[in-house]
Image (tube, rainbow, N blue to C red):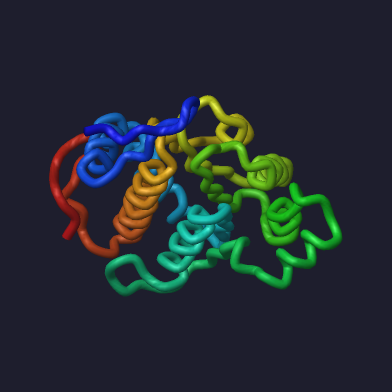
Length: 212
C-alpha cells in the first residue's frame, strides 16, 4: 500500500522505500565520488601549505559542516597532525551579532571575509542549493580568491552557479541528499589522508577496493 499525500506534495519515503531511494541515488553518485576524491587531494596541498578550510551550512547541513572541520582538526581514521578548519555555523556569538546588526544574507559572508584568504577553501553544504546566506558566502569567497566547493541537491541551483565546483546529488528528497553528502564528506577525508600518506589506499578511481 502506498501512503497518500496532500495534493501538490510528494509523499515521504518510509522504511524500505527510503532505502530504495538511497540506492537509486547511489547509482547516479559516481561523478560526485570522483570530484570529492579530487577535492581531498587538492585540500591536502592547501592545508599543508599553510592555508585553511572554512565550512558552513544550515540546519542538518550545519552539523555536517561541523563534522567536516572536526575530521580535519582531529583525525579521520588514523593519527596525523591537526589542520586549520573552521566551521562558521559554530561561532554562536558572531552569528547572533551579525544577525542583529546586518542583513541575514551576511550571516556567513561576513565571516568568510574575516577569515578567508586567497587560495583557501570554502565548503558550503545545502540540500536545496538555494539558501541566500550560503549563496552570498560563495560570492564573497570567490571575490577574495577562495576555492568555493559546494555540496547541494539537484541542479540547477544558485549555490552551484556561485561556486567554483559543485558535488550535486541527484535525488528528490532532503534526507537522501544529506545522506550522500555524508558519504562525499568521508570520501574527501579519505582522499585527504591518502594524499598525506596516512594509510595506504588500495582503491583506484572508478574501481572496487578498500582503504587500509
